[in-house]
Amino acid sequence: MTTIANNDTNSFKVKFNYIVSLWKEHKYRILLLIFLSLVNTTANTVYPLILRYIIDSLGNPTGSFSLQNAIALLIAASVIAAIFYSSLQANRVFTNLSFSWKITLVILRWLLKQRKKFFHSFSHGELLTRVSDDIEKISWQLCSGIFRFFDSLSIIVFSLIFMFGFSLKLTLYVIIPLFLVVFIMVLFDETWEKLFEKLQEKISSVNNIIEKAFSSIKVIKSCRMEYFSEKEFHQIMQERKKSELKLAFFHGLWHALDLFANQFSLLLIIFFGGKMVIAKQMSLGTFVAFLQYFYLMFDYLYSFAYFFIDINRAFVSIKRHLEILWYGKDKGEMKNDRSLFDEKDIAELENLSNKKIKINEIDSITLKNVYLKIDQRTILEDINLTLKKGDIIGITGEIGSGKSMCMHVIAALEEITEGNIYINDIPIDKIDIDYYQKNIGFVFQEPSLFSVSIKENIILPTTVEQENYFLIYNQRKFLKNYLPLKPLAIKDDFQFEFDSEILNKSIEIAALEDDIKSFAFGLDTLVGPQGYTLSGGQKERITIARAVYVNPSLFIFDDSTRSLDYETEQKVISSIRKNNSNAIIIIVTQRIRSITFTDKILLFEKGKISASGNHQQLLRKSIRYKHLFEKETLGNS
Image 1 (cartoon, rainbow, N blue to C red):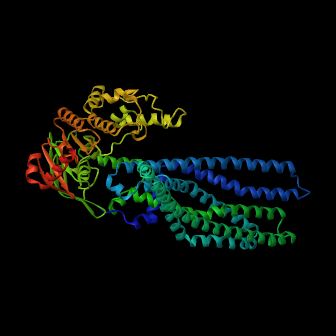
Image 2: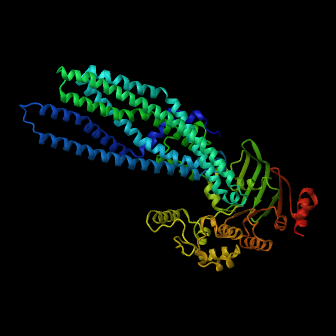
């Protein structure tokens, strides 16, 4: 499967399909906007005619039209126009937000299903820009931008019709300089697109730097790297500033040209139109109406011309979204994407996933001639491995030898480049990955905790419970009682069901009992952002308890007990083995003495399994293994 080419996402047809897909999901709202836009156009174009009628009537001494009637008619017309315009604006804003919500939902749903290979191609800052700044630009342009263009086009057309009706010659004098400006704008269409694309790249770079600074704040502070971080941020901001200024320069140039055309056209109207009024070739009311149509047309001409700039900005953002949504797809799969936003099509795709084999227990895992390459660099090479129910496997090797990446492959977090993986003798591509991963208790090198209570970190909600939990989260967020960072003295209410017996057993196995007793609110104690209130060992044991609670048929401990002392580590592993005798247990560590008791030990070197066997066998047949063990033993003595 190949990654999409740049010209696939650059195609106008593809971008048009993106817009149509989004509009179909909001068709009734779009029809309402079309109706309100037509009413708004009618109100705007009728107003100068009323003004013309009033002025000409007031100038007629034999007429019965009074000043009071004229004022009443103008007020009524203005009020009606204001009501419909306000309604139009409110519905545009609502639709903008609906578009933003829908696009964000689709993008996030897609992102959450991706494996690690995807995140090798897009940095966190890049993704942050695409799901925030790009979405904002798309949602505004595909509703407000397009309907402003629709309003502008209809008002300009109707204004020109009436202006031509008043005076063909005078209208030609006016429109030539104005439409010359529009022609110049369209002529530089590609230039605008390149400027917007460059700016979005710079915004992504800024977000990358910010994300890196926040995620590495401990290193920055401890190593006194503040000055370097500041200089790095300043450098990328200077590059963004240049892009912003370049874009602002072109905007300013266009605005100046537009203003010049407007003033020049106005002079022509006053000069030639004034002569026509003096010569009685045009009434004063008609001249005033002509001026009104000119000002109306000019106001909307600005939006009309800017549409060609802003739509390029939106097209750049759409292209960036399609690069995410079509990542890893071939052209055949892209053609089958009938709609990006249709819930029925999304559900249909999910049904295809539901047709895959669902496994409730992992009995065996087989890797045959597995290779993994990232950015043309070989990470794993010719891995052959068989794991069966009840096996306890130790994996060791130096840093960068491929141990962790092999675990990610086994857990279906990474897609292999070559070879085959079988789960219960079934090819992994025929298995429902969600069900497979539900059977895995993966404890990572860096313990990851949510900013909730200890209990909630151990018992993660089911899919149904997540819906309820999300509603509770929204209540906290949008009502006034939401606290982004609660003090530790506040007890957190637990909102979904759990098995207290299994929970207590998980805590016991993870050797967490004494720690929990020491906290003021026990299991209900909030851990703070990323668990900053806990020690490294406490965080590791909470993640171990989380893995134990789901009762998986495969445990993976990826160097996840390094903060524990040897005795605690052995106690935890022994308890897990005793209580999950049928599970496959994999322990990845650089501390060889932690895995000497395992059924088999695999030694990784440069992405390969260089030796395998139990501890005693490896001491006899692997010089490298023996050297690592002796080095460790001497270091501990």
